[in-house]
Image (cartoon, rainbow, N blue to C red; front, top):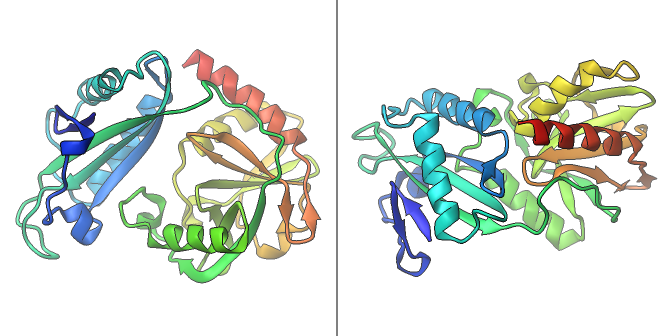
Length: 281
């Protein structure tokens, strides 16, 4: 079942208007949320990131779009798909109402949401090979728009096809200054000794939810120093660890980049801290 503007519709009868602006112009934003037994993990952070993105895209935010209303719509979506007592991945997409060309006829919005089952309730560290490579066919222009989850993700799509065609599990993206900013499906962290760094938002990386959680956790761990700083491709093979973060996987260690293999001790420590935070939210 798909939730379309508060109405639950069977998936096989749902359809997208050919005039949908998210389809025509990428005029939309989305959130991917993990739910465990009906609990939306880090819902407040997702909600405020969605509202900020809508404001940046100059969408009119309905008065009804309160945290309580949207959470209730997502809960109804979970229940309709028999996932309210399971682990699930929810996608909530908000797009501007149809009409106009580049200039919209109106700035109101509509939304849809759907949910799919996940196999694990909390975040785990899978001890499996995970190889990455740089994706250099296209570069990310570092600005405010690149930090948002918009429905225009062509670089991520073509990068994913490149990874699949060449036998990689993921790719790392570069900005126009040739700094490494993130992976195709999440933020990037680098560990060298006891020092941890992640690219700053100014470099164009996604304003990630799990990134935000780790930025709150790391200052409380005196055994590590931490900074938000640009990462050059040359630093990757000098690092002791590289790992990716996103809402669904939590923390995913990279095991290989070119000829360099990596450990995952720090990733394992941070994952424990992240799971504690999940249980407390």
